[in-house]
Length: 331
Image 1 (cartoon, one colour):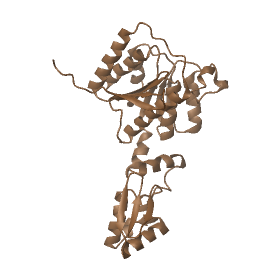
Image 2 (spheres, rainbow, N blue to C red):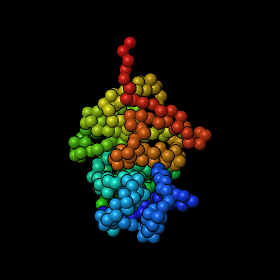
Image 3 (spheres, rainbow, N blue to C red):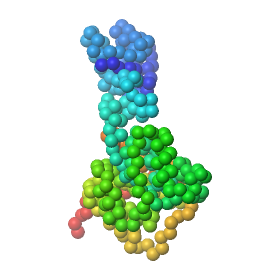
Image 4 (spheres, rainbow, N blue to C red):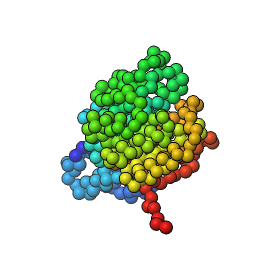
């Protein structure tokens, strides 16, 4: 096995010890004749073939560094240039990084809404290595979109947003697949039809706010319940943003649906916000996209069946966390 010294690793030398550090690991080794030689060789060569190490102590030294991701697999010559940064990002912590990156290309993501949040989410997921998308939106490009929707420019005014988004992403990622649906989702059957026409959808993302936040989210959660597909939700107001939940359990979906239905019943006037700015849209969408990425590369998801509420009035602060996967206590 060919291993190389991770570019995320720092090696320090003190009077009686060597210290190997990454952002998440710190290993201390006592200095002696063996470690002096091995560290010197490692810094000079920056690589080692583990299968060719005959000396047992030397092999244990390198295996320890490999276990702690100071040494990592050498895939430099077989990873496409466009994937190398993503690949190395995961390789710092996961030995199975190549399989995880390869699998991202196979996952099919349905995104409803191609406004400020939806466009940013698909941009970041595509940049992270996802290649299979279904996008739904009915709106055309308007000049007032430009302050927060960065795939658009003046020559696109009057053109369907999903067409512009698809064309621009295909210019960057030649292997990307995007199925476009130019519809305004007003009932559950419309979502059912889209899912029935696309096999193996792995996740539904709600980035829409029309006809109302509660109504479109309710439709998506209902479909998520029916098809047993995780669904992710993000939204932004004037001063507050919601990151999540990503709903996995049926229990959490039921509770979130009950909350949405109650909100819809109680509101007697619910306008669409005209004020929106790039910063809040970008923060919310990037955080959600990162959590989706974490789920598919088998990392911890902090919004699993939870909503994080951010307050943007005084910096960026997470003000509240709402858990939807709770048990109802009998009275």
